Image (tube, rainbow, N blue to C red; front, side):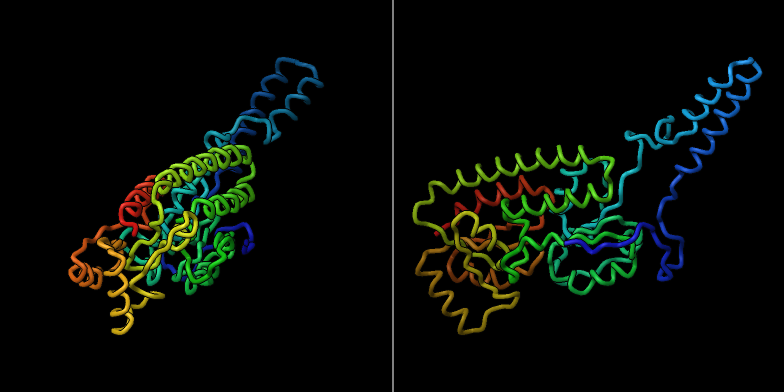
Length: 326
Protein backbone atom coordinates (compact mmCIF):
# COMPACT_ATOMS: atom_id res chain seq x y z
CA UNK A 1 0.00 0.00 0.00
CA UNK A 2 2.72 2.45 0.98
CA UNK A 3 6.13 3.07 -0.50
CA UNK A 4 7.87 4.35 2.62
CA UNK A 5 10.35 7.20 2.29
CA UNK A 6 12.45 9.38 4.61
CA UNK A 7 11.53 12.86 5.89
CA UNK A 8 13.40 15.52 3.92
CA UNK A 9 12.59 17.44 0.75
CA UNK A 10 15.61 17.07 -1.54
CA UNK A 11 17.04 19.53 -3.98
CA UNK A 12 17.35 17.55 -7.16
CA UNK A 13 20.02 18.11 -9.81
CA UNK A 14 17.44 17.77 -12.58
CA UNK A 15 16.39 21.40 -12.18
CA UNK A 16 18.70 24.36 -12.68
CA UNK A 17 16.66 26.59 -10.42
CA UNK A 18 16.23 26.30 -6.67
CA UNK A 19 13.55 23.91 -5.48
CA UNK A 20 10.24 25.51 -4.56
CA UNK A 21 10.26 23.83 -1.14
CA UNK A 22 9.39 26.28 1.67
CA UNK A 23 11.86 26.48 4.57
CA UNK A 24 10.59 25.58 7.97
CA UNK A 25 10.77 28.67 10.20
CA UNK A 26 9.86 26.86 13.41
CA UNK A 27 13.41 26.81 14.83
CA UNK A 28 13.95 30.47 14.04
CA UNK A 29 10.65 31.41 15.69
CA UNK A 30 11.54 29.44 18.84
CA UNK A 31 14.93 31.18 19.10
CA UNK A 32 13.37 34.62 18.78
CA UNK A 33 10.78 33.83 21.43
CA UNK A 34 13.40 32.44 23.78
CA UNK A 35 15.41 35.64 23.42
CA UNK A 36 12.29 37.68 24.16
CA UNK A 37 11.43 35.71 27.30
CA UNK A 38 15.00 35.69 28.56
CA UNK A 39 14.95 39.47 28.42
CA UNK A 40 11.78 39.42 30.50
CA UNK A 41 13.44 37.13 33.02
CA UNK A 42 16.46 39.45 33.19
CA UNK A 43 14.13 42.33 34.01
CA UNK A 44 12.35 40.31 36.65
CA UNK A 45 15.65 39.52 38.33
CA UNK A 46 16.24 43.23 38.70
CA UNK A 47 12.90 43.36 40.46
CA UNK A 48 14.34 40.90 43.01
CA UNK A 49 11.81 38.19 42.43
CA UNK A 50 12.50 34.86 44.13
CA UNK A 51 14.76 32.30 42.48
CA UNK A 52 12.13 29.52 42.48
CA UNK A 53 9.76 31.76 40.57
CA UNK A 54 12.43 32.61 38.01
CA UNK A 55 13.31 28.94 37.52
CA UNK A 56 9.69 27.95 36.99
CA UNK A 57 9.16 30.78 34.51
CA UNK A 58 12.25 29.77 32.54
CA UNK A 59 11.12 26.18 32.25
CA UNK A 60 7.65 27.24 31.14
CA UNK A 61 8.74 29.77 28.56
CA UNK A 62 11.53 27.70 27.04
CA UNK A 63 9.41 24.59 26.45
CA UNK A 64 8.47 24.66 22.73
CA UNK A 65 5.33 22.57 23.16
CA UNK A 66 3.65 24.99 25.54
CA UNK A 67 4.96 28.39 24.53
CA UNK A 68 3.02 30.50 22.00
CA UNK A 69 4.12 29.87 18.44
CA UNK A 70 3.47 31.13 14.95
CA UNK A 71 3.23 27.44 14.03
CA UNK A 72 0.07 26.91 16.05
CA UNK A 73 -2.54 24.48 14.74
CA UNK A 74 -4.53 27.24 13.08
CA UNK A 75 -1.49 28.68 11.33
CA UNK A 76 0.67 25.66 10.48
CA UNK A 77 1.34 25.43 6.72
CA UNK A 78 -0.56 22.90 4.61
CA UNK A 79 1.16 19.73 3.46
CA UNK A 80 2.02 19.32 -0.21
CA UNK A 81 0.16 16.41 -1.81
CA UNK A 82 0.22 15.17 -5.41
CA UNK A 83 -2.49 13.09 -7.07
CA UNK A 84 -2.85 11.56 -10.52
CA UNK A 85 -6.36 12.67 -11.55
CA UNK A 86 -8.93 15.34 -10.75
CA UNK A 87 -11.41 13.18 -8.79
CA UNK A 88 -8.60 12.41 -6.33
CA UNK A 89 -8.25 16.11 -5.59
CA UNK A 90 -11.93 16.07 -4.61
CA UNK A 91 -11.23 13.17 -2.24
CA UNK A 92 -8.21 14.86 -0.64
CA UNK A 93 -10.08 18.14 -0.20
CA UNK A 94 -12.92 16.32 1.53
CA UNK A 95 -10.49 14.61 3.89
CA UNK A 96 -7.95 17.38 4.49
CA UNK A 97 -9.68 20.67 3.72
CA UNK A 98 -7.17 23.52 3.93
CA UNK A 99 -4.55 21.20 5.42
CA UNK A 100 -3.53 20.14 1.90
CA UNK A 101 -1.99 21.95 -1.04
CA UNK A 102 -2.74 19.69 -4.00
CA UNK A 103 -0.97 19.19 -7.32
CA UNK A 104 -2.72 17.21 -10.08
CA UNK A 105 -0.76 15.31 -12.69
CA UNK A 106 -3.34 14.64 -15.44
CA UNK A 107 -4.60 18.09 -16.37
CA UNK A 108 -8.17 18.70 -17.62
CA UNK A 109 -8.69 17.50 -21.18
CA UNK A 110 -5.75 15.07 -21.02
CA UNK A 111 -5.82 11.28 -20.98
CA UNK A 112 -4.37 9.27 -18.07
CA UNK A 113 -3.25 6.67 -20.59
CA UNK A 114 -0.72 8.86 -22.38
CA UNK A 115 -0.03 11.79 -20.05
CA UNK A 116 3.47 13.12 -19.46
CA UNK A 117 4.10 15.52 -16.54
CA UNK A 118 5.28 19.06 -17.16
CA UNK A 119 8.55 20.43 -15.68
CA UNK A 120 6.52 22.53 -13.25
CA UNK A 121 4.65 19.47 -12.02
CA UNK A 122 7.95 17.68 -11.48
CA UNK A 123 9.13 20.58 -9.35
CA UNK A 124 6.07 20.10 -7.15
CA UNK A 125 6.88 16.40 -6.88
CA UNK A 126 10.21 17.27 -5.25
CA UNK A 127 8.30 18.92 -2.38
CA UNK A 128 5.34 16.59 -1.97
CA UNK A 129 4.88 14.70 1.26
CA UNK A 130 2.44 12.22 -0.28
CA UNK A 131 1.68 10.92 -3.76
CA UNK A 132 -1.66 9.13 -4.13
CA UNK A 133 -1.54 6.76 -7.09
CA UNK A 134 -4.71 5.17 -8.46
CA UNK A 135 -3.56 2.69 -11.10
CA UNK A 136 -3.99 4.71 -14.32
CA UNK A 137 -1.63 3.76 -17.18
CA UNK A 138 0.76 6.72 -17.14
CA UNK A 139 1.76 5.77 -13.57
CA UNK A 140 3.37 2.58 -14.86
CA UNK A 141 6.12 4.71 -16.40
CA UNK A 142 6.29 7.61 -13.96
CA UNK A 143 5.83 6.38 -10.39
CA UNK A 144 9.41 5.12 -10.08
CA UNK A 145 10.67 8.37 -11.58
CA UNK A 146 8.66 10.36 -9.07
CA UNK A 147 10.18 8.29 -6.28
CA UNK A 148 13.70 8.93 -7.55
CA UNK A 149 13.00 12.67 -7.75
CA UNK A 150 11.80 12.71 -4.15
CA UNK A 151 12.88 9.73 -2.04
CA UNK A 152 11.20 11.43 0.95
CA UNK A 153 7.73 11.23 -0.55
CA UNK A 154 5.26 8.66 0.76
CA UNK A 155 3.73 6.90 -2.24
CA UNK A 156 0.28 5.52 -1.41
CA UNK A 157 -1.20 2.94 -3.79
CA UNK A 158 -4.96 3.37 -3.51
CA UNK A 159 -5.40 1.00 -6.47
CA UNK A 160 -4.93 -1.95 -4.11
CA UNK A 161 -8.74 -1.94 -3.74
CA UNK A 162 -9.14 -2.91 -7.42
CA UNK A 163 -10.10 -6.54 -8.05
CA UNK A 164 -10.28 -6.08 -11.84
CA UNK A 165 -6.85 -4.94 -12.98
CA UNK A 166 -8.04 -4.53 -16.59
CA UNK A 167 -10.23 -1.63 -15.49
CA UNK A 168 -8.42 1.10 -13.53
CA UNK A 169 -11.49 3.35 -13.15
CA UNK A 170 -11.99 2.56 -9.47
CA UNK A 171 -13.05 6.12 -8.62
CA UNK A 172 -16.37 5.57 -10.45
CA UNK A 173 -17.69 3.09 -7.87
CA UNK A 174 -18.85 4.65 -4.59
CA UNK A 175 -18.13 1.40 -2.74
CA UNK A 176 -14.53 1.36 -4.00
CA UNK A 177 -14.11 5.06 -3.23
CA UNK A 178 -15.02 4.35 0.38
CA UNK A 179 -12.13 1.90 0.54
CA UNK A 180 -9.79 4.37 -1.14
CA UNK A 181 -10.51 7.22 1.25
CA UNK A 182 -9.78 5.00 4.25
CA UNK A 183 -6.31 4.36 2.81
CA UNK A 184 -5.88 8.07 2.08
CA UNK A 185 -6.95 9.13 5.56
CA UNK A 186 -4.46 6.72 7.13
CA UNK A 187 -1.67 8.22 5.03
CA UNK A 188 -2.65 11.78 5.99
CA UNK A 189 -2.58 10.84 9.67
CA UNK A 190 0.80 9.18 9.22
CA UNK A 191 2.34 12.30 7.68
CA UNK A 192 0.38 14.91 9.65
CA UNK A 193 -0.46 13.24 12.99
CA UNK A 194 -1.25 16.45 14.88
CA UNK A 195 -4.47 16.66 12.85
CA UNK A 196 -5.47 13.05 13.44
CA UNK A 197 -8.91 13.92 14.84
CA UNK A 198 -9.63 16.33 12.01
CA UNK A 199 -8.92 13.66 9.42
CA UNK A 200 -11.03 11.11 11.29
CA UNK A 201 -14.01 13.46 11.49
CA UNK A 202 -13.70 14.42 7.83
CA UNK A 203 -13.46 10.75 6.86
CA UNK A 204 -16.66 9.91 8.73
CA UNK A 205 -18.45 12.88 7.16
CA UNK A 206 -17.29 11.97 3.66
CA UNK A 207 -18.27 8.32 4.14
CA UNK A 208 -21.77 9.49 5.02
CA UNK A 209 -21.89 11.68 1.90
CA UNK A 210 -20.88 8.71 -0.25
CA UNK A 211 -23.53 6.50 1.35
CA UNK A 212 -26.18 9.11 0.58
CA UNK A 213 -24.93 9.41 -3.00
CA UNK A 214 -25.11 5.64 -3.40
CA UNK A 215 -28.72 5.66 -2.18
CA UNK A 216 -29.68 8.38 -4.66
CA UNK A 217 -28.07 6.52 -7.56
CA UNK A 218 -29.81 3.29 -6.58
CA UNK A 219 -33.09 5.18 -6.52
CA UNK A 220 -32.41 6.42 -10.07
CA UNK A 221 -31.97 2.86 -11.37
CA UNK A 222 -34.72 1.32 -9.25
CA UNK A 223 -37.30 1.73 -12.04
CA UNK A 224 -35.16 0.45 -14.92
CA UNK A 225 -37.01 -2.86 -15.11
CA UNK A 226 -35.10 -5.36 -17.25
CA UNK A 227 -33.10 -2.66 -19.01
CA UNK A 228 -29.47 -2.81 -17.97
CA UNK A 229 -27.20 -2.22 -20.98
CA UNK A 230 -25.73 1.09 -22.11
CA UNK A 231 -23.43 1.85 -25.05
CA UNK A 232 -20.07 3.58 -24.55
CA UNK A 233 -17.15 4.43 -26.80
CA UNK A 234 -14.51 3.64 -24.16
CA UNK A 235 -15.01 1.06 -21.37
CA UNK A 236 -14.53 3.43 -18.44
CA UNK A 237 -17.73 2.57 -16.58
CA UNK A 238 -17.28 -1.11 -15.75
CA UNK A 239 -16.94 -0.61 -11.97
CA UNK A 240 -19.93 1.74 -11.99
CA UNK A 241 -21.99 -0.77 -13.99
CA UNK A 242 -21.07 -3.62 -11.65
CA UNK A 243 -22.05 -1.57 -8.60
CA UNK A 244 -25.58 -1.00 -9.92
CA UNK A 245 -26.31 -4.22 -11.77
CA UNK A 246 -25.72 -2.76 -15.23
CA UNK A 247 -23.65 -3.77 -18.24
CA UNK A 248 -21.63 -1.43 -20.45
CA UNK A 249 -21.35 -2.31 -24.13
CA UNK A 250 -18.11 -0.81 -25.39
CA UNK A 251 -17.19 0.05 -28.96
CA UNK A 252 -13.47 0.10 -28.17
CA UNK A 253 -11.84 -2.88 -26.52
CA UNK A 254 -8.83 -2.46 -24.22
CA UNK A 255 -8.15 1.00 -25.64
CA UNK A 256 -8.27 -0.14 -29.27
CA UNK A 257 -10.83 0.32 -32.01
CA UNK A 258 -12.66 -2.85 -33.11
CA UNK A 259 -11.75 -4.75 -36.26
CA UNK A 260 -14.08 -4.52 -39.26
CA UNK A 261 -15.63 -7.88 -38.41
CA UNK A 262 -16.07 -7.02 -34.72
CA UNK A 263 -17.61 -3.67 -35.63
CA UNK A 264 -20.08 -5.31 -38.02
CA UNK A 265 -21.17 -7.73 -35.30
CA UNK A 266 -21.47 -4.90 -32.80
CA UNK A 267 -23.59 -2.81 -35.16
CA UNK A 268 -25.91 -5.74 -35.67
CA UNK A 269 -26.33 -6.12 -31.91
CA UNK A 270 -26.81 -2.38 -31.37
CA UNK A 271 -29.60 -2.25 -33.95
CA UNK A 272 -31.24 -5.36 -32.56
CA UNK A 273 -31.34 -3.92 -29.03
CA UNK A 274 -32.48 -0.50 -30.22
CA UNK A 275 -29.64 1.60 -28.80
CA UNK A 276 -29.97 5.27 -29.74
CA UNK A 277 -27.37 6.84 -27.42
CA UNK A 278 -23.59 6.52 -27.39
CA UNK A 279 -21.78 7.79 -24.32
CA UNK A 280 -18.40 9.38 -25.04
CA UNK A 281 -15.80 10.87 -22.71
CA UNK A 282 -14.48 14.29 -23.82
CA UNK A 283 -10.79 13.31 -23.53
CA UNK A 284 -11.07 10.93 -26.53
CA UNK A 285 -11.70 11.28 -30.26
CA UNK A 286 -15.39 10.90 -31.09
CA UNK A 287 -15.01 10.10 -34.81
CA UNK A 288 -15.85 6.40 -34.47
CA UNK A 289 -18.80 7.21 -32.24
CA UNK A 290 -20.10 9.75 -34.76
CA UNK A 291 -19.90 7.16 -37.53
CA UNK A 292 -21.90 4.64 -35.52
CA UNK A 293 -24.39 7.29 -34.38
CA UNK A 294 -25.16 8.13 -38.01
CA UNK A 295 -25.54 4.43 -38.79
CA UNK A 296 -28.09 3.87 -36.01
CA UNK A 297 -29.65 7.35 -36.30
CA UNK A 298 -28.68 7.94 -32.70
CA UNK A 299 -27.02 10.67 -30.64
CA UNK A 300 -23.81 11.24 -28.72
CA UNK A 301 -23.82 12.29 -25.07
CA UNK A 302 -20.65 13.25 -23.24
CA UNK A 303 -20.04 11.83 -19.78
CA UNK A 304 -16.77 12.67 -18.10
CA UNK A 305 -15.15 10.05 -15.83
CA UNK A 306 -12.48 12.60 -14.88
CA UNK A 307 -14.71 15.44 -13.71
CA UNK A 308 -13.39 17.10 -10.57
CA UNK A 309 -16.80 17.54 -8.94
CA UNK A 310 -16.96 13.81 -8.32
CA UNK A 311 -20.20 13.56 -6.36
CA UNK A 312 -22.28 15.84 -8.54
CA UNK A 313 -20.86 14.35 -11.72
CA UNK A 314 -21.56 10.74 -10.72
CA UNK A 315 -25.20 11.48 -9.92
CA UNK A 316 -25.65 13.44 -13.14
CA UNK A 317 -24.06 10.61 -15.13
CA UNK A 318 -26.36 8.07 -13.48
CA UNK A 319 -29.38 10.02 -14.73
CA UNK A 320 -27.96 10.17 -18.26
CA UNK A 321 -27.10 6.47 -18.32
CA UNK A 322 -30.56 5.58 -17.00
CA UNK A 323 -32.14 7.36 -19.97
CA UNK A 324 -29.87 5.49 -22.37
CA UNK A 325 -30.47 1.99 -21.00
CA UNK A 326 -31.68 -0.79 -23.28
